[in-house]
Length: 459
Image (cartoon, rainbow, N blue to C red; front, side, top):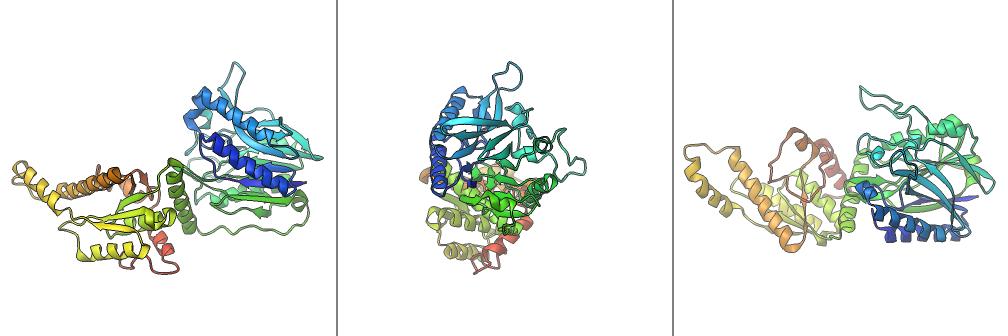
């Protein structure tokens, strides 16, 4: 029996695009002699669909898309994820379901039992948990199917006041009683650099605990603020990873199930260090935010500091330097060195740049406010006026040319309230808003790993 892992990049609500991606994967898997192709959680709708799940028309379109994929499953089966309406008079309106498609029909369904409500998740808002566990037979193999969190019933506790077991039931334990020969998990597991190794250990642990091979398929790409890193894997029953797909890339990979049960050689991909993972995640986030929103060009303010330098490099790499414009907005307080550094960086990256002095509008504000500020010393008020002037100019550029303004504030600044409302907090996408300052420095060093792009005096 041959199995294909389809690690793809979906767009929420783009049924036509998602179906096209999946149909191409089915065709490729069929051409490679595969018997079963596995997709990720809620792949039909894209993840996370959020309140679109409250829209009946959306759900009907999802059902149509599901049947389009099913129609293409001839001579091959597929496991897909989709929302299904709960026809019972009690409970939430929907189930989060994994479905097995074969010869144009749905031959098996498995409802997600564990619905996370922590961190970015709020699944119990929409879905009723599954309470029954079963397996299906395919090509003379007994197969169990689970959905993402169903195998995360035990996970490391990251809070001093927390639990490692968040649920009162373990789907893996229940399914193991039915003696499956393979456990499949379809996932939509977002990236967190602290969880990449944890995810591996969870799936390796489940395989080892029950002596059953585990196959997990995750999605890749970004949808709004969520970034998915892929890293799909096939784990042997002894807990070693036989195959692992790349991080932050689409990948379709076919292998023989016998490899999982025999002594096949491990092809585990070493997990990159957390700086490289964050770097790749940010590139993915920028690229998909723009691509899926229909935008191509970005603008940002380049100060000569490390935050805007890192954001500029990320944007140039993700979008292409021809699609990025840097505005240098010096004031009377800007040093010549900081302007020179910013110019050098712009030239190193090959982006478009303009220098626009804010001295004239700043002087105008001073004159306008002189009567009411009379007798008071200059303080943070004047500093904030400069930041707000820069925001006005940047937003004017954004409006005039249709560029998305990139915010350059980091997480450490946000955590302590270090920023100017309506000033340097402006922007349509906060590129490093979830990155601590210490990691900003590490990313800068990573960007310069092969050659000097960011001038060392900025770092």
